[in-house]
Amino acid sequence: MVRITRILIAASLCMVFAGCVTAIDENLPYPQLPIITVATQFSLVASPSHPTAYLTSEKIAAGEQVQVLGMDNNAAWLLIVHGDKIGWMPTFYSRTNVGTLKPAIQIEPLSAACTHYLGATFAPDDSWVSGADGAGIVSGTIYRPQVNNNFATATLTLEIAGQGTVQAADYLHPPLTAATSVILFAFALTDLQQDSRISFELANPSNEPLTFQATFFSTDCPEQFDAWTPGYVDQLPIGTAKRTLPEEAPTPTSSRPTPTSQTPTNQTPANPSLTPTATATAVIIKRPSGPTPSSEVGALPPEIEQVLIEWDAIHHESDRTLDPAALPSVLTDAALTQQQQTLAKLQQGNCYWEFIDLAPSVTLAWQAVSASEVLVDVQKHWDAKLYCSGKFSERDSFNEPFLIRYRLRLSDKWRIAEKKTIDEAEVMAAPSSPDSPATTGSAPPQPGQVDSPLRASLLKKSQISAVSLAYQAQAAAFIDALLLHLDDFQLPNLGITRRTVTDALGRSDAGDRLNSVVQEVWADWQSNAHARNFDAATTDPANQGLSPFRQLIIRMVQGRQGKLSDAQQHALHNYFTRSEDATVWRRDPDAVIGAINRESFQWP
Image (cartoon, rainbow, N blue to C red; front, side, top):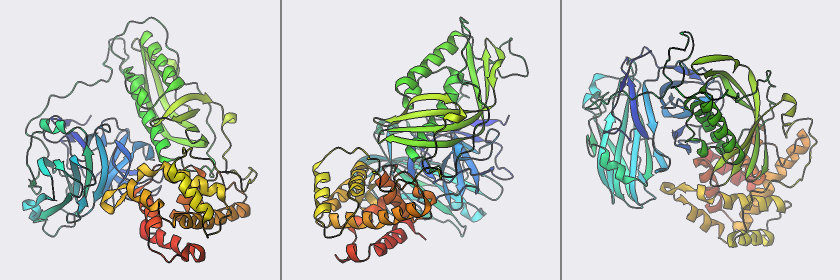
């Protein structure tokens, strides 16, 4: 076991890289950073607490290799280096077994309840403009891929043009390998006002190639700054190596079960002593190896996928510690009751589970029942060991793949409402299976947006528009999706907010723009559906070779679009605010779509 130097969490670095640095491997520098292979396409995010806070619209493709810099305390997220970017990815997305990884840094993410992601910059002199008043947190990284001694006098200064004060700041600068190092920095800000402009001055960086990245968060808990011992204020001497804080905290007591005299030496330690009163009931039914997913299965919406990732991490931890506290964050209704009862039975039987992922979970099929309910069939493969009264229960343990169906419901957020194991024959047929009959022209799923004056106004503008439209139902669904996602528009530094988009939709030509894009995109999409024999209303456009903006429009019409990424926010705002000749919406909508793809998605 690698010995880890524990870092004082309550002291000066509890904001670094959107969280508290809780441990640094004292064996640094490594010969090389750990490398993993990506299992599925994804975008880097700024913090595990903000899983839709995408740093860029660029995606890392399946099969690519990335370097692992750190992980969160639950090993559910990995901090990785990819090209000139550093960000977080779910452990679930790694094709490589991460159970034996030795991360350089361990980080406890910021509280999702207290903080809100606002944006990022990627060069010191790039300005970021605050769209919120109050307190904020700035955190970031400077990656040094080719270190040299001339960097020793480098400093980083945060500059505010307008209102705002730097209350405290600190940094870490550990070596990673003999040739590379990373600087993690953080600033606590107070009294910011809208339009406060933040930038940095990086002085004396020598001639090294450097990768700079800063992320910005607002915080509803500025009182936490009072416990942050200010190592520095607005200037950091980042050229000086720094891998520890002034004090060391005692190594925290692990919640992991401790050995008892009854535990065989070749088995996992037993849970702390509990009074045995009953035999535990196995949580999972053994299943034979499941089917392979259809190549036609579309990607899960990001917010649904994130709930399933969080549930796996919480499930593994709660069935080991028997602590139900985290269950309501991902479970509700029957699923929550079922899991609470499971933990109660385990505790009564003096039992607990140890789960190790032998393979990433695989989504076999999913179906949107409504705008607020989704079914997902998943194949999992665990090494699941049950221990009761300090003894390994071989009869109830298993390591075979099994299938499970989740029913998720949306209230204030998505949660799992039901979960049950299923047989191979019960797996839902993929909606876009070649065997499925093509039902062109069928009504798309509706996002369930309630009536509003803006909705009524947009429908009226669409109906009286001079731009012809053959797809009234699809246009109504697109309007509903726009209204449903208004709160997603949060790029104030680019002038993109709920208010600016709402104002754009209130313009007199909004009906022309709506009809133009729906008619152009849906007509082509339905033509493809006829030619390729798939259902236009349910088939995910992601694998059909379409441009990003066309994919976005189709997914919104279908009611399957998740939280809008930065690029998608920019694209929709761009479309409804750009200056064009009034005739272009009838004459050449494809030219506008091409311009949006180039300007907002940098495609092709």
